[in-house]
Length: 361
Image 1: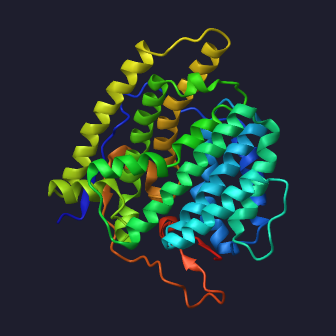
Image 2 (image 1 turned 90 degrees about the vertical axis):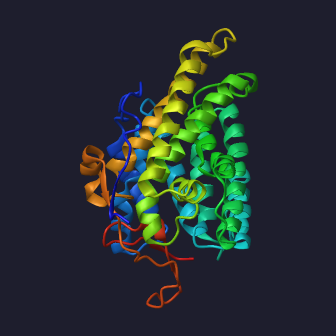
């Protein structure tokens, strides 16, 4: 097996250019201080966390939000990261308990969390207590609904991981559409909008959402595959799924993803340019902004995959240019770290070069 592979340039012809929110530097500094206030990371680990720049993906995904609403989107990324990293090293029952805590915090954002509870509960509570101040009622409702669905899908992912189950391509697409977390992210596009359910839930808009979601998780899986295979955590990745089902190698799976992504892009653009439903003003103008935001999310996710250091370290921009990736040796571990006095777990997806993010469970 070759120790190198090429990743496809799937957004070469994508309509949406790279755009970034001008409030990114200021909000990034606020987020860093907020995260440090929980004391979850040591200074070294905090530095590794900062390299990933999770606020960057929000600033790329929501380029037109004002500063307060951008803060909400960046806080949400912190919630996502904590849940993602903890759940990746937890069993099904443990993940379900995290879900229960998180959803209770969202429904009761003004109620202090119990002492000794998983830190994600208080992080979520503070995120939403601030976020609802600048979120429309419709966006609040939609966010809580979609975030709950996303979290339950991650519970299923934990069950599959425990059972060492490699899903079929069709099975994988079905659950990935839920656990990738795009639905709550799309709801956050609505923070200053008042879109009725009939607009957002219209079959055509829902189809656009699914197409964008598929493109987003395909790029995510392409970018994360190398780290995941090095950590032995790649069963739940489209590259492994395609390799397993189609009896092909890494490059063959990458090529399959590239061709499928082209089909998704063509369908998305056909709908975007010709089939957006009309409801009358002011809904039509807001819906146009919402749909534009969905298209931009595809670009934002792609850019962050290379500009942040989560998947490729400091080589991201070089890899974006050359498309060539060297296969990492299998070296990560999800076992309890015996050097850490309270038994924290090593979080595989946060491995960045020689840095490993570690948070206290």
